[in-house]
Image (cartoon, rainbow, N blue to C red):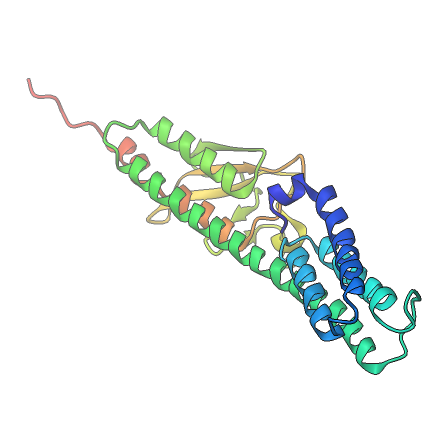
Length: 257
């Protein structure tokens, strides 16, 4: 996953990834008598690691390829030719490519883990805020339901989410508490196929086996593939409305004369 900053400057990054190893090799070629190839390889590895650590796979591979080619041309015999006659120099060239690919993949993996942790933190923050809203005595049911619907929309990346009182229409697929989809056949996989685009999906709000209402999810404009954690969070968000819906149905106490 590439950060927005890297994406904004990606052309510059790619140019630097290709040019800096060349410049380094030109400097090292001028110091060929004083600097052996082993330290030169370490310098080039640092440049490859720097490019790969940005999380841009193309930059890491480009830096590795540039370092390997210019190391061969400028720092190994025969100089000025793309040819290697020594085993150690060939191993160094391969090392540059392997390090570039490995560091790039490790950087991408780390960024994916960081993004996943950030999303999980955001889901929990949303649940806490919704729970606090549900407990607010001066909050109307309509406002609470609207707020939860918006949070579900954001969590799942939907086009729209709306609430209907009572059981949803028969035949609508339902999102289960475990994040699975019921009513579309056992072979349907949200992770693979995404949320249905041809129908709404219901998230039922129930208390003691009685369906109080349902949030209807619409993802019609594009295929959305929310993770299981996101889908379970949407169900938990919907559950935050249960106390308010039950309170709304409770008959008002008789007024004293």
